[in-house]
Amino acid sequence: MDNQKGTSISFETFTWKIENFSKQNTKKLQSKAFRIRGYKWRIRLYPIMKNVDHFSLYLMIADSLPPYGWNRNTYFKLALVNQLDVNKSVVKETQQKFNGGYRSWGSSFVNLSDFYDSKQGYLVNDTCIIEAHVCVSDLSTLEVEANNLNKITPTKDSKLGDQAASNSESTQQEDDKETETEISDESETLSSSTCGSSQTEGEVQSSDLTLKDLLDLASLGKEEAAFVPLLEEACIWHPSLIRSQRKSSRWFKLWAFTSLGQVLHLLKTSKVKDMNEDACNRLRGLWEELVKHSGFQLSWLEPYVQSALGMEAHLDKTGEVNKLKDSVVALEIKMKKLRGELEAAEAEFEVARRALTEARKGFIEMDLSADLGYAMF
Image (cartoon, rainbow, N blue to C red):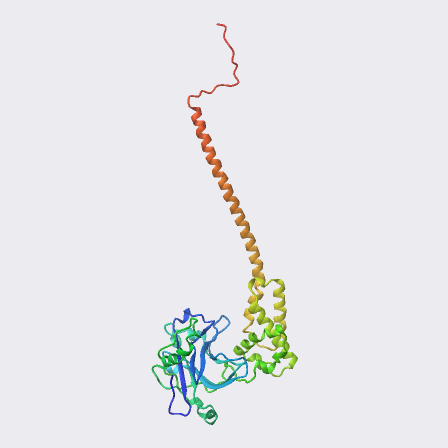
């Protein structure tokens, strides 16, 4: 950890070094938990998939907290370190309020093409370095010193990540049994230039609204209540879902989120074998209404829906393939049986042939149709 001095706004820093990046599961990649200001945090890498063209990072709550009834106001910075030129490190800073509806905040950093280009300096020798700088000062001073926020830079320290790991290890040993990426023993100096505003393009915007503020969750039926955890998770990663419904009527909000919950629940609980014609028609109807009327921005979900809808054709093809496979197996069994019969017949033939050869020894054939006759002289 690093307590920044020389200013009334101080940070503690955690460094995450990801080695063998190309071999990591980038759909679910997050750091070990670390403790700052008495709270547990993680850095999370936004899932890198086919439909994502930016490298994005999030600071997320690692404590076990209830869905609602708590909040945490924090000023922090996330940095993607440039290992070739520290002045080109990308830093995003913001003051955000974490709560039951928003357990993570983050931003896009660089295009994936630039990230994967080792000449750009962000991924060198298949290793990238990420830092989280969390303010440990009294946040009430931030408004007073708002003009100085963009001038704050982390200080140099040779073992920031090592100290962060040691501070969190004793409290997180049992929580972190799953395999996760290695934490760095060293950190790099970051650029003195930071983003001037937390409202940059691609960055998550601040909002105090949660799903509980929009919907009367207590009034939901048993089926709809099962959608709530899925909707909460979706709203954490895509806050625009809540922002888009702020001015909608109570019943429209209920319909929109319930419809979205149905789609999420269907995708979450269904297996490939379940996507028959009826299931696909149901999903297709829900999705078309949701896209047309809800007002949600759902490009992040569309690839998964289209993939699920494609399962009907896949099931038909699977049935055809399985039918032909069964036919091939049956014919193979028949051929084996016939081969066995042929081998038995060949063996019997060989015995008969040898017996015939043996019988012909010393045997003179005669015309069996000739007359026996006799002679008088």
